[in-house]
Image (cartoon, rainbow, N blue to C red):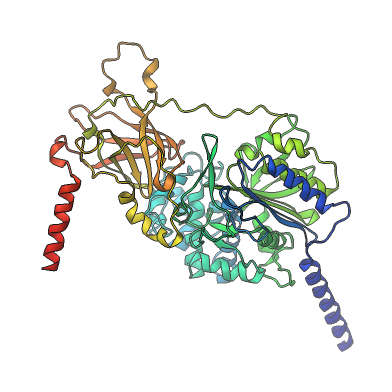
Length: 612
């Protein structure tokens, strides 16, 4: 009996040692897989894509080994710092797999909660959704698998008062769009709510919980979060967006401020660290040393298909239009599930302001591919074919794309044209007096926004590149930085050409009239003032180069000479939020003019009283 036990222990030790060695090996070759040839193809393809994507990083794992982990290009088009396998990128919605895994893990360790636990049981008896059905019955699983049928409302995150704590009270004001548990609607806000639930159950800050539960045991030493990262770090890829055909820099403040809800897209990582994250999932929750980090059954729950997606997330990658289909049709918990060349796959894309990412796992082959880039990549035009090319090389089959088609995709299979420019007219006169628009408007879910007058500048200022140390001050100082005039003030004497601006939290858009929706009506229209006005929002300040439309300003009610409400389809198209005036404007423009001189006099008087 003792000899049997001793023999079993030796066998177990050998297995553990084999697993450890198996998973820590890196940069090894695989039969039929030519690392240098593939890397050369990636490098060549990037040369023709660098005008949209200054830098990219790629990692490939198979059977626990890292076959390839490299960077290509530079961290910024204005610099010469090369991207490496340790360069940090925001991986955006790849964060959702981390959020789901963390919440499942802390619930399991608490011994009190699981995926079937009602959300209300964790957040308390006063928590509620819009209706009683969701309030009483919505579970953790419903939240993480996008079954709530509540529109995304992602741009709520521009509100500087929206935090992980306040989102708990805000969601009760978000109206549902379709039937609970039968309709898939992707929601970043629900994953923000899941972040708060994790903090409640895990009794700690979300970032700290991720570090202790995953980053440290998996050895993901370079991974961090947009809420904490210093984008001035030389080995961090800089955020850029494609604006009117050119790459433009995103304010360094934006990722930090917009990422407050963390669980939807705040994860920052590297090619090397993502190789460890992929192997963690491929091997059922163990790390490179063979130590169990998360229960295998729990990891399998994360990957289980749960909610049917109404249409493929990659419509340009479907036969018969292209040779091979990449399909993702069902959502799991932070993962898509689908097929490639007959193999079941897991995957997810990520898109944030300035970054694009994608990960695909082939569990049956213990294979994973990760790609990330800064810049833009609409319709997966680069990530998609690049992932397919790499997978085909790992699978040992002839790729359906080559260097040329990596550069031209979606051509020759698709003829995709960019959307036409919005029909706005900066010179178009407004339907009402300027004073009618100015004031503060409120929506119970979104909070408050203001319409103010700002200076009309002929040229766009570049997004200011604030250091991460100043980001915490940016919410309070935003109005000052953008030189917005006080609500109700019409300073035509000091500002020869004032323009309406919409300020929402730390975001600002200059409002430019769009071609009116009623233009097709007959000429018997009595007054333009009787119809809604549509505006195009040109991003400024922290939100420079992020334009949105339409903002719809509704005409005053009978007997009123001020605007009373506006709706923001620019924020959410399914059910646009309606903002109602809470601070009426004044028709007496001269009584509300605040000049620089008078403001200085008031400040001096105030200081003299303090110092007296």
